[in-house]
Each structure stands twice: as structure tokens, then as C-alpha cells.
Length: 418
Ligand code: LLP
Image (tube, rainbow, N blue to C red; front, side):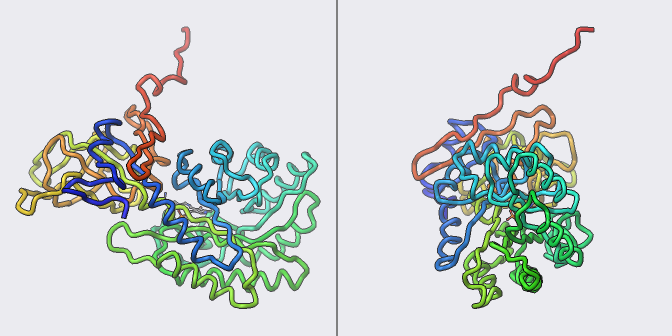
């Protein structure tokens, strides 16, 4: 494990978190190279003998240091904006291993991705298909496409992160898809390359993935019978991690179930995967300092220097993140039950609720499992500079993003002369 107590002090790999806080301040996201590499290796090992491309979902954590690490391991990338494409390229990612997802691609996004030469566009509507065809023709190229089909499968996850139900905005309805595929195949600016499905995020069971894949495979058979062969099947992302007591399938178990569903007839089929959280979620923590302890009438509060603007998951999804004291509590330490809250002026500004902690002002806390959808969803609300990010490798600490300065908060703003 990458975040463990050594001599009573919580460490990131071989570095005590206290040292990181002293050097870079708090709040600070701390990522473990070893943890990211181990998760990626699990995908690779479980795919041995198959043609699988792991396209890391950049939205989960788009720091260049993280992208660069994965690019060097040979990963591809799943992007959803021109901004993410720029990051991937800046980090040395191979555009031929990039898939472009998302419901709202602009013309500029499409042009940039075509010029970069991405592997595939995952198209989510007929209107997008038409726009992509036009943009590709204007550049004199053919855009490789998959249609993202909506299999109407319940991922049984939080409603905000469930995407494979017919009431969701994502994908092309299953019943419509054959017609849209025929249309795509006839468009001169497009090349039908594959099919794509993504049913949601933080999915902790294998069943919804398998159900979705079965639906996709039935559909692929029909397509192939009508003379539309596919080069790849993109199974999306969504594999959950353990935050508290969830028991998601192991990566190997999840992939084993997918390969079993593919069966022997499709043993040689090229498979694309788009994991985000499963690669980086448990590879990061948010390091924060206790500013005050406040004993209320109904509740006790540990007021820390990180807030909902740094990690919005608890406020937005009532997500549960484990909170650990960086100094391991002595067995007889005096503890109390606290809500761990930030300085932002919102009642929803909490990182954790009802946690038993032995803490004093000035102590450091680690909010665990913050490697995915942490920094990327942060904001400057309350004019709070965004946190620093560091990547640890063994005993080395690399400052992956320095803390924003106060001047940077308003550097793009100006006052009118009148
Ligand atoms: N592919 C597509 C098309 C996606 O929309 C997503 C995530 C992924 C892959 C990666 O999913 P993952 O493997 O990370 O589950 N902010 C939320 C999660 C939103 C996920 C959005 N789409 C959270 O903090 O839980």
C-alpha cells in the first residue's frame, strides 16, 4: 500500500506527509507513482494475450505529471475536451491512442482532434455525427468514429454518475443505433471504426458491465451481418474503488468477466477501456491542517484548511472519504466525534461527517481516496487559491503543480476605465 503509517506517522510511499506539508504547505494533493503504476499493471496483466488498449479517462486527474507517467507506461487516453487533448499532447501522450468522448464536442474540438490524428471519436448523437462529417470533409480527412450506444442498463450507482439509462443524456438509443450506423457508414467524411458503451462511474458490481456488453455484442453481430465490420469495441470506464466498505471486483475479476462475455469467437477482438477512478482514485490523498476545533451544541467541528472548493465530492454526492490523522493516535488518546469542515461559507462545505478523531489544532489530516475527481473538480470559490499537487516516487517528491498565488486569482480580470 502506498499510504501507510511508519513509526506512527502516515507516509506517502517513503515520505512522511509531515515533510510534504512543511515543504509545500496545505491543502495539498499527494499522489503515489507506485499506486498508479500498480493499478495500470493490473489492467495490463489481466489483459495478457488479448489486444487491449487502456485509455485512461483524463477527467479523473489531468495533472501533466500523472498523464506523463501513464503515457510512458504505454497508456492511451480518453478525453472529453480540446483542453484535455492539449494536456495529453503536452504530457507526451500518443494521439493515435486517444479516444474523444463527450456529448458536446465543438467544431474547434473536432478540428484539433482531427489535426492531431486521434484514434477515434465516440459520437453521442446524430447531430454530432453530421457536424463531424462536415468538419472532416472540410479538412479533407475521414474521421474514425464509434457510436456510443445507450444500452439502458442500470449501473446501480449514484444517480448523478449513472449514464447508461435511457433517461440519461448520454449515447444513442439502442433502437436508433442501427439506422444511425448505416447513416455513418454512408458519410464520406467518416470511417466507422468501432462501438462504444459507458454506463456510469463507481460501479461496484460486475453484473451491469456484463449486461451492457451482452447487449453491445448482440448489436455488433447485427451490424457485421449488414456489412459494417468493427475494428474495436470500447467498453468505457466506471469500475469502482473502495472508499469505505464497498467491495468492487478486482481489476482482473472485472476484465475476466468481460473476456468471458466476449467468448472464444471474439477472442481476437480489439478492446478499448476507459478507466479513470480505478487507476488513480486510491493513488491520491488530500493533505489538510486543522485550524480550529469548535464545540457546538449539537455537533463538534474540526475546521480544516481544505474545503469543498478543493474536494467537492462529499458536498455534491454525499460521498464518503476516509479521514486519517497523520500522527497515528495513541490507543488511549482522547477522541471526539467531529464533522470535518472547511472555511467556505456554505453548510454543504464538509469533507466528512461524524468521524471519531483524536485531533488538536495544528494537526494534519489525510482525506483518503482523493486521487480521482479531486483537483480536477476544484474551484476558486471564496477566492481560495487552488491547492498544490505533488507526485511521490519512493523517497522523492515532485511538485506537480505549485499552489496558486493570490495575484493569479484575478490576473485575468480588469476594471473598466469609467
Ligand atoms: N469514459 C467516459 C465516457 C466517462 O464519462 C467517464 C466518467 C469515464 C470513462 C471514466 O469513469 P471512471 O472509470 O472514472 O468511473 N465526478 C464523479 C465521477 C464522474 C464520472 C464521469 N464520467 C465522481 O467524483 O464520482
